[in-house]
Length: 237
Image (cartoon, rainbow, N blue to C red; front, side):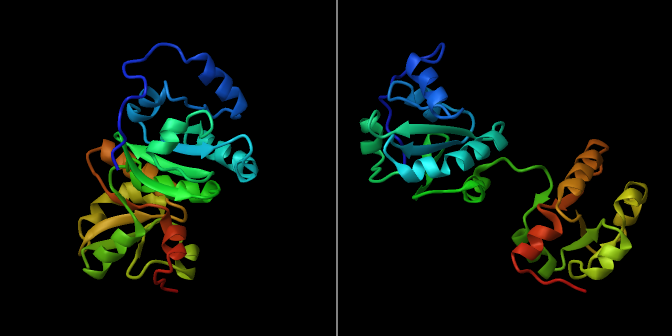
């Protein structure tokens, strides 16, 4: 859905009085008015999560701490704004908002997704994830599973041997993290492209970045073993 223009084109400079007051009222999340909509939402370089709300909306108040925690966590990746449907009726009408709370995600000037009803922190994370820039070499569990099925990759489990023995991805090779950088040459001898993983994905993401800086890019599994198991994918024990 393309959002039509007409909301204060070309406005810039300091935030308006409405925006400043709205920020305080929103617990750190700014309220966007019709005058500011184009600048703050349509022209944003980051994806924008809009929460349509109203002073009388009790479910909006109930989820406010979780929305604010999400906004803080994703501050460098996503812009989060609130729009009061009583004070910005033109926006609500054009976007066919019929109840609050309603959440919409805007990227590159278009509404990419919308959810009617309360959304807590975890659901908001899932809501924005498909629209966030991905780290170089990142593979989602579904992507890794497809490549593994085609025997195009070899999972490299970077945990300690005891943890590896308890559970690992099918066909995985165990090379502990602290030894892997010294054994990068071993990866070239594998019968497929190596994909490193750890328990949660954080350590192997950092490893992948370090190796890429040295001119030796290696893919990694986003979310690690936890994400793989969370999707119900097969595990060897």
